[in-house]
Length: 55
Image (cartoon, rainbow, N blue to C red; front, side, top):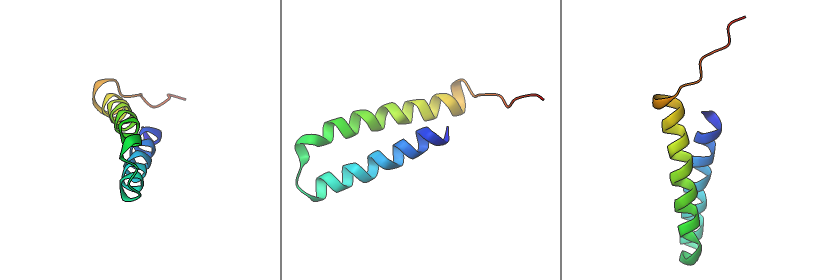
């Protein structure tokens, strides 16, 4: 879950960075990767959470 959250934050920062430099042509990849990481984040939080280990 934390990895997906980190990837989502990274993609938002990358999107803002590319837009600030006028590199709008590469932003669709950032949007796709952001959507995938948000999907994983949603899935691990709501749809199929990982149960903690029982020792």
